[in-house]
Length: 151
Figure (cartoon, rainbow, N blue to C red):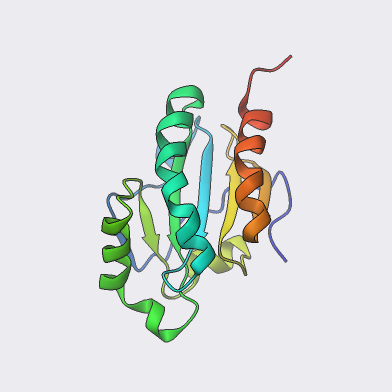
């Protein structure tokens, strides 16, 4: 069962390797964060990867949104860090990506799905969780709703 709403971002302890750059909780405090789970063997994940760069730029400027990717292997083949790096390069992903071969971060998030999206507000409290094909279409709407101007 995934984390409950309003749960604090659990952090990234136990990451196998970071790609692009490394982040920690203290660096994220005061900023909204979108954590995205994916795997190199996930077809649906590949379809959504181009959107991540758009969101990183668009919502980074609009809301200060920080994006963190978590590569969650679904099989032994998915643990090949070089294959993950190739996909990051192929899709020109520029945000920090944690390779979670030991599932340490995955377990902390109680995540079972790819793709999966966890949106945290600037207090690092989870405000949205979505997984699978339908979640991809809901993320942008939730970002606006949760991070947009308060009435």
